[in-house]
Length: 113
Image 1 (cartoon, one colour):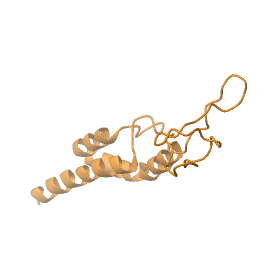
Image 2 (image 1 turned 90 degrees about the vertical axis):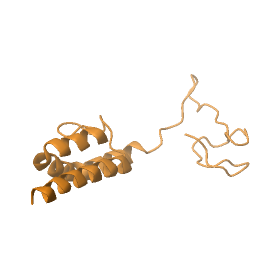
Image 3 (image 1 turned 90 degrees about the horizontal axis):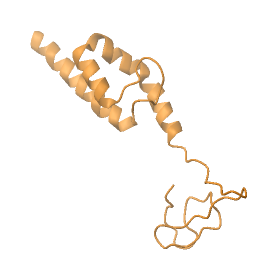
C-alpha cells in the first residue's frame, strides 16, 4: 500500500511538471498563493502533495487564462510623430503597408511580432 501511495505522488508530480510546461505556467503570471514556475509546482507537489496537488488543480484554470491573455500580441511600436514604426517581413524583406497585419502582403509568410 505504501508503494502505491509513493508511485501516485511521484506520478502526479511528474504530470504537474509536464502539464505546467504545456500550458505556459511561469513565475509572475498570477499573483498570490501559487505564483510558481513548473519546477516549483513539481517540488511543491512532491514534498507536500496533500496541499500542492489540489492547489495546482485549483489554480490551473487561472494559469491557462493568464497565459492565453499574455500571448495576445502587443500593439506596434510608435515613432515620435505618432505614426507606427515601419515593419518589414523577415522572409522577403518587403516593407509592410499595414503594421497590424499578421501575414506579409508580398510573400504570405507569417510575420514575427
